[in-house]
Length: 113
Image (cartoon, rainbow, N blue to C red; front, side):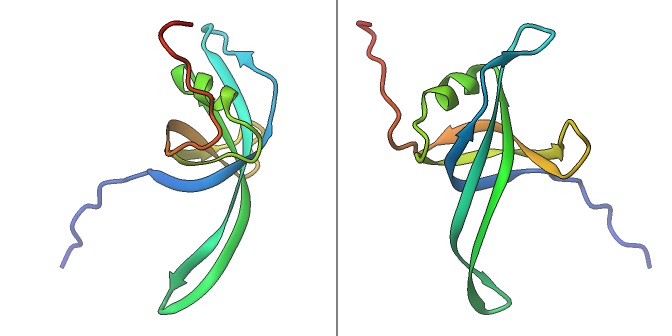
């Protein structure tokens, strides 16, 4: 009996705090890019047992997402959505941020500015 094919999915949604931000850079194609470090700490249930999980994760953003991430204050919390890929140095994984929601401590720019 064969197993049904499983469609690969690489999607991450993480509530975390911005704890470190590198300098704004640009890709060879001219897109803005920003590398950051995120920290998560909170309860989660695993096999019926409640435990606290804490970790830091390197993340990067490109294009329009960079503007929001660049304006966030260090220590601000948000929900980061994206996918995982190898870090550029080949060690470990990095979250590639596609969307940021529920942001606190981010200035809102009005249309009159």
